[in-house]
Image (cartoon, rainbow, N blue to C red; front, top):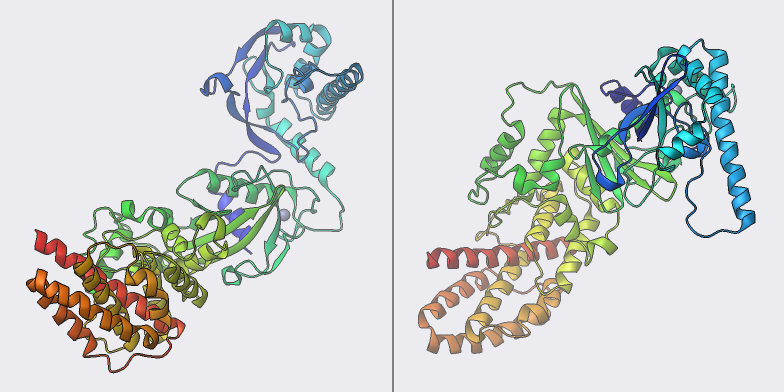
Length: 566
Ligand SMILES: [Zn+2]
């Protein structure tokens, strides 16, 4: 189970002690060994006016509203109320003041409990401070903001860093969180399970801090269809996988946020992250001489060298690579999918993926966002979340691209003024090259030898478009605007009409630009002579071929024009 792999990964990280969490602390009360007040200190986290202090590993609790040992805001630590947000009635005020008094009582009760169960002199000093000093007065005089976190130091030492205190807190958390001794954590199969997870995941799009509550039973291929509860887990295991997820979410190289989902990546053994290649391929492959080669093998070698980089060491065959997809609603996070493979395999699959997407006419590879967006009108609104999972499954695992992505790309092509964009062409090519029956097709550039009627029809569309543009210049509604949809699904119904229309355009060109005319007439004959009859209907895959034929022919024309201009 992937949660176990996350727990394993936590060993590589600098984890806080059990029951501790890294939070910002703003004010410190410095005391001597007898609890005599010395001075206050303000910790500056460097965040300016809204600074909340410096991050320290301190005791935490699953219940965010409960008192924590040695750390809290002004209400807990000194019983001094936060300033009310608006005017309030007398009743409301009395009620709030009662709540604050209770919080402060809870805070002191925890210290007393700790004092009874440990022999910590530091805790004794803090308690003695409470007994002897007019602490509310000191706090108010310092003009501190009750919203920020406060803690103590005894002779410059933080009590919560003591081993004895860490042990006390860990065992207290365990016993207070345990639901039943009978239910054992399914991850470590050792500790009793708890009903509330102690720490929360931070950084999933559209959610506040959330607890991981459900996970898929199946692996990546399931595309998030089968959800189930995470299962009974103990405090220790939950802290470890949550900490690891938070760590991955805080590092831009180890996570990829796409829409409402976020993917985290980590490895065991070697170090490897696919994030930059998938997210910003133009930067990742920056120095590559992209778009020059028409030989897939050569292209593959080029991508391969980018992934092996300047590292001398060779990846070990057992080095593992993991990915997991998370999403969240208000308060619950779900582990949707995951993937487990080895680093060399993931790299090999990525090289193959970029090679499969490669088309000579593009000046850089396209990121996973562009490919996914090419299947819908508005990626922010219309994109099914599993689109990214399907693409990642192809990129990292070498899985075939499912047909529904081809279907959606083709549908978008029919609806848009510019039917085939660079990313859409790449996606269609990726579909063909990952579905084995089409492996013989190269598709890197215009294939003048292909006799496939669908491909030839696509080429013809581009030639007719060029003829129209040559004769009429730019027009409001081109034949592509008006007929691409029909031409790519039922060629026989429109091409005869389009061809006879082109005769007029050619006649006009012949008078005005005879050189250009000859050139276009030749191009037209070259395509038409291979087309014996127009197909009545084209299947989905044939529509894909049509799209590529159109795209290749059109790009070839731009390449020529560029060359001629030079
Ligand atoms: Zn456990």
